[in-house]
Image (cartoon, rainbow, N blue to C red; front, side, top):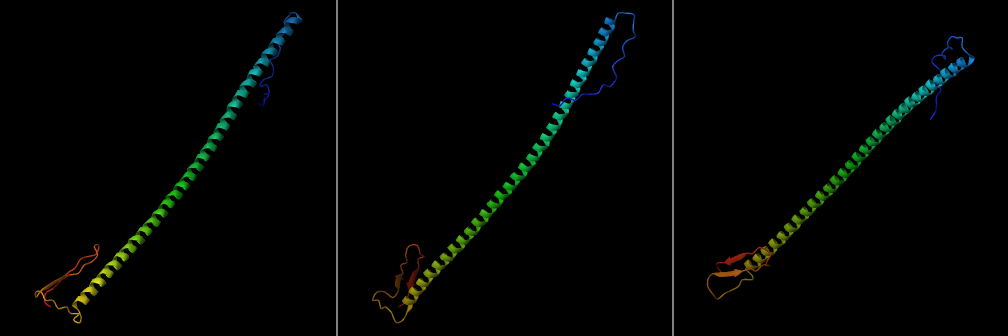
Length: 165
């Protein structure tokens, strides 16, 4: 810590008027006044040092507060940036998921439509074969014939009734 010597604000007090006393009393009085002056000067220097230390502490605390506030602002900005990046990643993943789900649904509908078309074509061909006059069947039983076309279990069932032969 730097000690600053303050110049005396007032010159030392003049020696008191000379009395008709011995030289020892004057010297003692001057010595006492000088000691009192030195004591006051030391007290002033200590008070000035205390004020200077308080002011330096105030400046340091102010600088630390400013630095802490700036660090806090940078942290807040960084957290916001990270949060936005995470939200964007989540939105991108959600978009990809939606596109995949829509594609799966579309493919499933196409496959189901193709399966239905295949079943329809098989049944149509079976009906055409049964109705073909070249392959006409003669039955000795009754006038009305009931025939049934069997289809695998997961496919729709058709019952064909032939009334005249």
